[in-house]
Structures are given as C-alpha cells and as structure tokens.
Image (cartoon, rainbow, N blue to C red; front, side, top):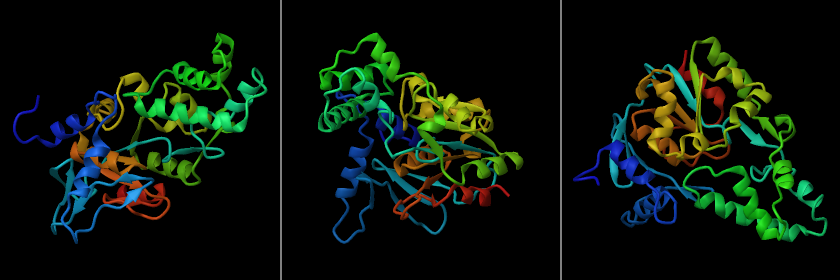
Amino acid sequence: MFVGQPTGLEAVMRLAEPTESGRSPTRHLLRRAAASLPEGTSRPSRTEGRADPVERSTGGPTCITLGGVTTTRASSSEGLRAVLFDSGGVLMQPIGGRWNPRADFEHTVLAHAPSITSERFAAAIAAGDRFLNASPTTPDHDDYHRVMLHDLGVHPTSELLAELRREVPPATVLETYPEVVDTLEELSRRGVRMAVVSDAWPNLPDLHAGLGIGQYFEAYAISAELGCNKPDPRMYHHASTALDLPPAQCLFVDDDPILVTAAITLGYAGRAVCRGAATSHVPTIASLTELLDLFR
C-alpha cells in the first residue's frame, strides 16, 4: 500500500496494478481527471477514443499530470543515447490493417468449417478482442484462438491450433512504415543504441528479423515474456537496464500518448508518433525521421 502523496514511480505502479477485472485503471483515471477540469478549461483531446494525459506549460520544464500526480520533464534532448521503440504502430503495421487475428485466420478456419459466415467471423473476432483487452498481460496464442473458435462453435483441435500459429514469412502479413529502415540505419550509424518495448508475443524478434530490422535492436522487453504490459515500469526498465543506461538517457517512442506519459513520469524522455493529426498533449513526431534531429 502507498502511504501519503505518491511519487512519480509510485503513481505509475498504482496505475499499472490490474483491477479485479484484470485491467489496468490508467485510462479510466485519466478520463476521470479530464472530466473533473473546471468549465472553460480545455479538455484533453482523444485519439481513437483514448483520453490523452494533461500537459501544461510553465515556461521551463513541462509539467505532466498523470492520474492526479504532477511530474516534470526537461524539454532538452541533451544527453540522450538510446531509443526505446514500441513496435506495432511505430515500426510496423499489418498488411490489410488488422493486427489480430492474423490475416489468414478466416482462410485457415474455413478449411475446417466451410459454412461459417463473415458475420460469425466478425462476432468471434470481437470476442477475441474482448479477451485480449481483459487480459492483464499478453495471453498465450492458443488461448486467444480458443476463445474465437469457441464463439464460432469450432472444436479447437491440436491440428487447427497448430495451423493458426504456424510460421509464415513476416512480409506476407506485415510491413514496416516507409521511413523506418532508413531511420534505423542512420541512428545506428550515429551510434544511437536501440531496444524495443512492446506488448507482444515472444516471436516479435523473429518478425523484425523477417522484415529486415532485427539487427538494429540490442534488447527486447516483451510483455508475454515479462508477464506485464505497459505502463508497468518493469517494461521500460527491462529495456534500459539491458542497455545499461539510466532512464534519462533513453527516449521512449510509442503511438499511444498515455504510454509515453508513463515513461516520462518514470524519468525517460518521450515522443508520441502521430502520423495523422497531432492531438497529443505530450511531445509528438509525425515520422520517425524526426528522431534524427535529437541525435546529431
């Protein structure tokens, strides 16, 4: 139990603790904080239905309020030596636009149950989404597939489960964003160290290798291996510790501003990737190419 006013680290740990439903209350607390602002005060904008953290300028360091706890971050990039990247939405995206299940899910299941309609697939995928959202960490692949197969009324045989998780060439279902390879190459040339912090399954390094970017990363913090999801501090600290660098020398990059705010609260520098309209209340970049300005 935390006693008295929580520190920045304690605040993030508290926000990372799962509720009885297994969910972290971070987003709920941020929405509640935004709703409590006085009338006439600008409320945080939303990206894909998520409440952004509140940022206010003080003329010097920026003050970030997360769950009612205000911490500060320096605006300078001086002293940065490494970048900690999120993966999905930052480095790569699914061909066709859907992350989960994999794009060949319907084709694989139809080979075993050819009468299933597209409407039933949509309902099963929604059930799978609810399962993922309710999980305190990244669940086992087979458990995820079983949820959807149960919704479809299809028996999850060992053969079918093996087919659904079989390896396919990453480039058939995933692609890197256009600027990624050149940016990573230039960062590497400049001596910038790099790691990945991602809520993902354990095969993420293999996917990156198949897309031609795995060689740039010295370390991975993967939720399915660590047993926790961002914004749990263990995710961020695993990567910076693997690089043997303090948080202040690491820049965390994610497409979710809330997770960037959590990193800033822990002492990391942060940038949110907003490839569309910039609606975040944390520092943003429209392309990874902009990172090169921070590592001259």
